[in-house]
Image (tube, rainbow, N blue to C red; front, side, top):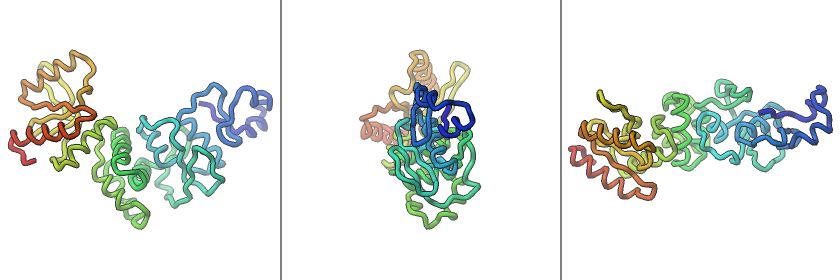
Length: 273
């Protein structure tokens, strides 16, 4: 998506003032996009970076979206690390320390690395929201808790670092959606053993992936709407039956029920829960 500084485009002769006025829309002071362009989060991030004079670094939830949290709303505030500037609606600027090894380039725009992004969202967002972002970053980039550990020491006195450690300890790249993260946290917070995610099972007739569960006990948990195709539903269910798995299906408003059934299933399989 074309995002331009109007003054640069005119000075370079790429646009006339009339063409800029009629064909482009100002998204921030001096920053323009085509009038019919969609204002997605990547476009708005680049616009905010240009607005800082190309000195800002995309960070926080915006960086998480660029690293894989694709469900972040396109209208969410754009977050940057930059020198203080006059406040603008929809843009959050933080003037804080950042190391050169904590910055990389994505779509020609400086953005915090997955590790720094994870640290920032983990120390600023409520725990469950933070873990949804962390799981998405881990799933798409392969980020691990060990990758973030050096930043804990570097920013050991930063606000929210204790909360960050707690959230990062629960990061799991095997959770493939915010809903799966929610379900996983239901189970963990209820005191059940930490489930394994993205479990591959199969035989010579069918293969499938279970969202989460406990392979040793052969107990699986997934959202009721996890499988959209009828054939996949039937074949996966028959596969689980052949291999003696207990399958527990969860509903969005069924937190207590899924915890009770998971605990009962684990106990039947001899697992202390």
